[in-house]
Length: 449
Image (cartoon, rainbow, N blue to C red; front, side, top):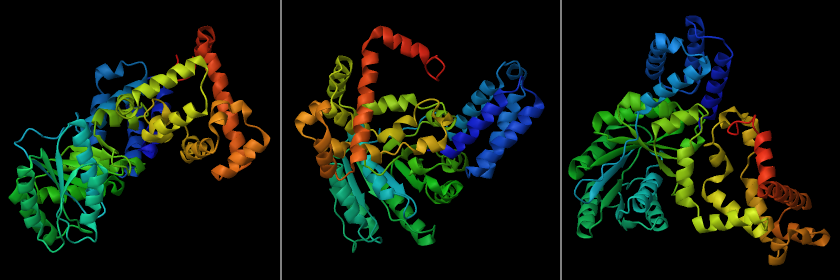
């Protein structure tokens, strides 16, 4: 996420940090590099212009010129301006209206509306303990209604059935009455999309909006379309009174143009971001956290929230005890792999740690989560005794495990070697004196000083 933009900012900050003091010349040259970085990230030109003007004006202030470290100064200025561009604070859904609260989703075809509807339903059910009803008025796209029905089952959400022969307006009205009769807290309406903005589409969704008077009208847009996402959102906003935006596929967006442009162009806040294909991969959008990640400062708060929500605390405590007792075996390692996968995998976790922006992209690319899937397959191919006593795995056992897991002998050897190294590391951690020395030796590393 934002890898390209983050790497550019890291280089810019590093270059400025090597200079003794802030001058008008080095600020000018630095901001020219920032402008280039934003252009490459496909940020809308009016946004870039505003950003550069604001940072330039603030960086020339007397108070700022007294700072000793130019790099740190620039980080603060750029961070604050990024936060300002994206909306300052998190914008929450308005769920205070009389039930059922209606949430209308709009957007182009392929933007991820249907999946976002199910993700939002799950979020509201799990986080806000709301009873949610899903309904689809998309009678044009083949199997759109069926897709939402399947997703509703997956997310344990009530679904209002509809047919392609029905008029979208009739479906919406009937769904509202159904939600009212069955005392649902929230009704989420998934609407039809088109390949481009057209009059028929706008007339239909305007009629739906007028009939339902939704509390929230959210525009769903693919973040990977860059500044086009902001322009399309602006076109919809002229017809519909949007209350916010859901940016989808943000996990695959290395540039960041949409995230930095939408709020400024439309005046509407980004309320949620899609960060994966699974129905739990929807997160509230926090401008300050996003700015920190772009600048390579990590996102510890989101990481902590993920751990609290998705990690089995009893299992985690059990693993911690085994870690310190050095009784950690392959069954424990498999449980650890599964918990990590539930949290989005290694790349997702490391992306939130401070300093990861300084790690070369080539090194990050080597963190392929497929290797952990392979590790789990190898562990599953072991007997219970082999998982509990890894030292018993030799010769013919290795060959049998490789064959049973669909892997090769070198793959099994690699897992055994890495597990052995992990056990050695645990022995160092279990001794307080050695652990202290280890931390001292790591003093030169970020986060251990």
